[in-house]
Length: 426
Ligand code: LLP
Figure 1: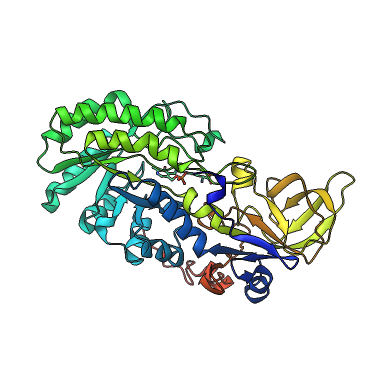
Figure 2: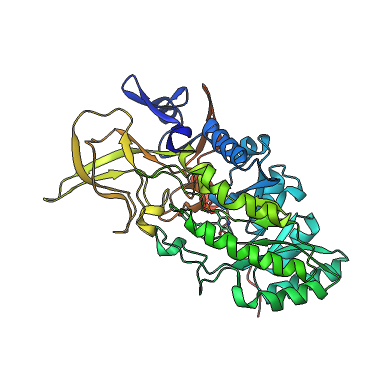
């Protein structure tokens, strides 16, 4: 499956940019800027493409909610048969609130608190992905107390080498904080297998994020399979083989991931083990479905590169300043002509930028820009720094659109502050 298969939901027509059958200018006029806009059909298309690619083996797609956990978007995926992967008590709450059945939820995360583990057990999630011997002890302890048998998977650090886009999104190499260190797995498994309160039902890995080469999957899958065989011999009642997330999105000129090759790497291995495949994609499903609309406030010449100052910045999209990430930017209605500029936000930080030294449409004050591939890790990483209300999220489906999260108000931003102080004596 190549680059051509996955469509681009944002297309230029009549001199302006559309999302599906809705001109983005109409959304900007109605809800203001900044605003995130998502295409429902882009979500469906990606979910279906992955589902079809994995058809050769029993599988479950657990969308990684950390990429974007808004209910309006979850509902679209849910209607497709998609399940959920959560990494906190908060995401578990959101998943249940969105109507996911507990047995359609898997619960991972490197630092789950005891109360979060209890919430997972009480809800009856499909799997709790355990990341350390110490966490296993707490899961066992709470399962005993609740009188349940905890169904768990081990998240293992496959310790494969991954050439990541940025060191901050590398997760599956030796020395990273994630997963049970490879060498420790047999000992931790022995503990799990000896416990009447634990059912070791799966193995899980996540080799990394935005994986432009599928080679790390090949290495990781082989290693995880080796471990699965070993544990099966030791009597582990394994049912699930979880290959994690990490399929990439197109931010610039990247190819779409080769889903046929992805399946070719994973499916035969999982079949030979007699297990059911789980995948936890986040970015692949939602990134390209989204764009961030922002209005140009000022154009500031500095003698060198001009600054285009926009009403969105690191508060709406942290990725450029946090990972030096590239996001394509274009004007909804280009004036003609190009300029090389720095696109910066209004926040009092030099690191507040959306693009640096970028050749792009020659944007002037009043113009609305679309910052692309922002469906994943955009809204969920939004900040309210400088007391900036979070921007609304809009879902487009064909020729219809709806606000799925309203713009935060100034009142919302001070809602948690105490009106009068209730002092306690020490
Ligand atoms: N499963 C596990 C265990 C993960 O740690 C992650 C992402 C995923 C699944 C989903 O990965 P995806 O398919 O989205 O690559 N904020 C960063 C990305 C952090 C990803 C962390 N883990 C960014 O904006 O690039």
